[in-house]
Amino acid sequence: MKRLWKVGLLVLMLVTASYAKDVSLKEEVFENYVLKLTQPRHITVDPNKHIWLIFTDKDGNTFAMDKNEKTTVTVNQGHSGESSGTVFFFQRDKIHFLWREKTEGKELLFRSVDLKTKGLENPILIDKESEPLARLKIGGTKDGTILLVWYGEKGDKKGKRYSIYSSFSKDFGKTFSKTVDLTPQTRSSLYPSLVVDEKGNGYVFTEVVNEEGHTLVVRKYSDGKWEEPVAIGKVGTVSIYLRPIIVGERILVFWFNFYEGIPLTEMAYSDDGGKTWQRKAFESTRGLDLNGLQVVTGGDGQSLYVALSGVTKTPEGEKKGKDKVYILYSHDKGTTFSDLTPLRHYPYEHTMAHLPNIVAKGKEVVVVWNDYRNIRANLYMNYSKDGGITWQEQDIPLEEPGKFNTVLHWEANNLISLDDKYYVLAHRFKNDAMEEPVPVVIEFKIQK
Image 1 (spheres, rainbow, N blue to C red):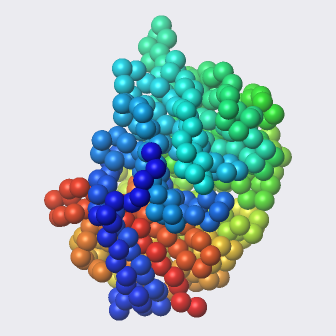
Image 2: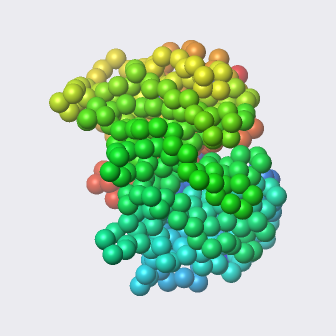
Image 3: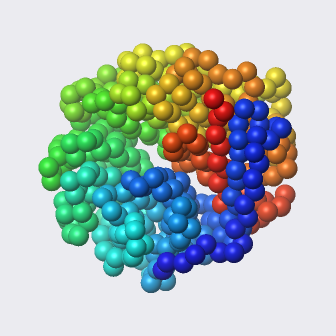
């Protein structure tokens, strides 16, 4: 369904507000859409430089908005079940969607939308036998390859099995292969992660748990086939944060795990297409219990930036202080990293800051996070122009401090750049009872 944005759209213009030094701001609040907070949401830019918002409302309907043309499509139109876990991928003149729909059973559905006409193609049933859960990944290349990866809970005679499954297309999503179980060697894999290189090779990372303990493994997709899994090494108990990324031709993966209750963030990289791996533990994060982890590249084939948030814990599990935001950076594709640096500029320890979102263009790095220094949840920002080495002496509020409760998503990185502007997608509660969260987009420009 194609339609104009609802009349209830509220637009606020705040040009170089007194509380936002050196930054011009513009804000859009979509008051007629009440979000379902358990579902992911995204802000992204298509090949034509149109900004899209993708989110799910409280009734389980998933919407995709072309912000430039002020049009909206209902991704799960024609389906009565509740959609969840929606992910997307741009390819040529289309945007592809993958979502899990729950009616009497669990179905995994794929659908394409024309970027110009906003026309909806008929959905394709990808799988239901694996009993898919709402943990989905999608990726691909310009030549027609599309990779779908998901988490399923199909059981066997021994009970439930939590495994990662996949299907692929080589004809721009017209047809898909049979479902493949990527982790048959375990009964308990981690939520899936996926990264695809320019050659069309896909890499899926997960934790395999069996009688030998916990092992981080990777499986590579190449030319229609999945290669045998490669073990990166023994790990602790891996949390949900598993972030793969490609810088140049180097494949990297970052993860957060516990060793006998002690949290530690680690990484590994491969320069030979995933055959062998070099590991690194960030010792400065030992004891830092993460609640936010985002990794981006500067797009120059060298720079890499890691934004983290968490609280330090003692070996006995007691918290020391409040959640804080940190940054790590590398200018040599992840071979070496800076020290862990606190990013928030605030002298008091009684409130927390967490859930950093990050974007980088070469050496210009911008981080937005949730900050509670004004009691209510506000968005604050800081930026670096020298690749993370130095930052502004004062954090910059992106909204009037203390006026609203505006919150970032706990998992998605919803900060993007387009030309000389930045855009962050969050949700804002209509009152202090934390009711009726609605989407809000804050656009800002750093004055040169």
